[in-house]
Length: 320
Image 1: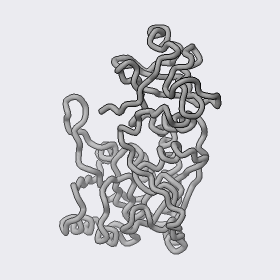
Image 2 (image 1 turned 30 degrees about the horizontal axis):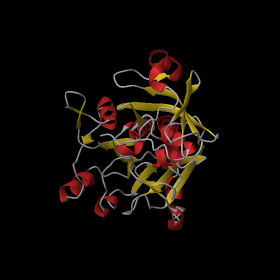
Image 3 (image 1 turned 30 degrees about the vertical axis):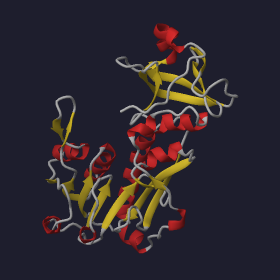
């Protein structure tokens, strides 16, 4: 399609905001922006706009923030925009069937995985946690099921050993913007050739609960290292050190036999704090104590060497 499209955009977090900015910089006409209602944040719990709303305000675009889309009023509001297409990126609200059928060309979703792998809320983190060697973005024609619609376009990205949940999401946002713009240029052809997903190949990326960040030292060190990367910067991984929560910000696994109990400190020096695990050892290289800043282990040990003596065991209790 060579002529610009009339687009309604729906999204909420920073990942979505980068796609909105990409559309703003494109020839397409954004007739409205949908985002979740403002939420309280910070110590004062003041209402804060979402990153998508902030971009929309800066671009002086019409903003619509429904708490739900399950009413006739919502259908009427969307109808008035006379959109060619609704682009959805990490919006966070379910789109009812009636809403999906309103835009002339339907609704398009940018999903941060190679569908049907990792449908659901946390595809980026679950890909790292599971040891996947590659991921990508999928441009999908939306239907009532959760991330089940036919795929129009994909772009693939290798997952490196240095990727965290945050840096991989950043790389996928950049990839997703170009994939979205390219898809809109060829939307008629892509819709005609859309590939149905193979449900038998589907995996589900469950939402990450905060308590998942508690490191279980009976697990394999390789899994714990991937989890530290996947959950950085949020929700983060932690363990207990004498009753204090020690945030584990960076770590890697070494394939050496464990010594003593799971969670026992094997060694602590400028190269890292080495912890015995169910399989192998985890080497913590960056951590944060309560009330302190994030520090390399070399810096941390200069002030707290006595707290990391070999033979001491770290806890794995869940904390609120």
